[in-house]
Length: 301
Image 1: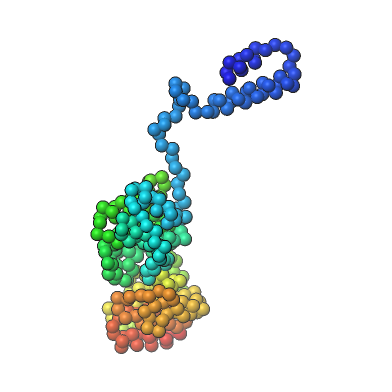
Image 2: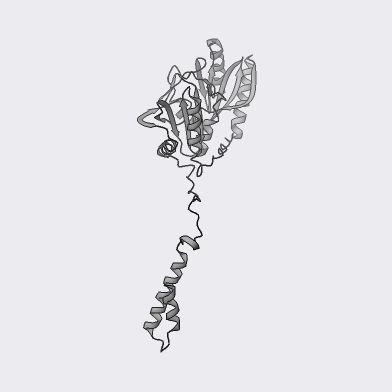
């Protein structure tokens, strides 16, 4: 090709359109030749150098992405087609079996949604939010992008492999930093409503401890402010309007053991009360206390 180019430039005679077309073709071929990867003496690419993979979208990871990462680490994976719903998480999980152990994969709409649920998990996985959980095997949680993964297993080595597989989905094998959950803004009216309730409870002769904690229940559309009334947990949900509160409250079963389609095992009997824009949840064995709190809430309406 290069010899042909040298002969072409040495040609004499009149310049015709045919000659120009011929020269243009030769110049184009030469340009393409210089762009091709050379082999042998003139090579510039080392075949052993990995090409960086395109990072996966952290908000659009799928169960299939995780299955690929797990099998890539030599683990056997069975996709069961079954789903598992945990009352403290906002989405259902797809059930996999990895090396014969149950692996629950929760896929969220976005990474910040996953972070909001994952933020409730206690250090050893035995508590989630205010719920004490009795797992049938030790729980091992992993999180990356919009995926939350729960492995129930006594095998710590398997748990480590699953965690590495999950983290590898961040960007070409590099562990992703967990995105910070977007803070939940408390409307000014919400703070005022909680203060009104605290004043009314104390006027009833009840001891009230105000905490800085918030509680998010997957089945309610707003988070709760946590109070302790006579030592019992009282969750106070403040809505922007009465209609929104009524929509959430309508899901609650008469005995409080289910909300919508979610069955719940509370740490103590649940007692719900509502009025105006406030919904409260008191967890206590003390029915007399529950009645007093309900009267106070009703009076605020």
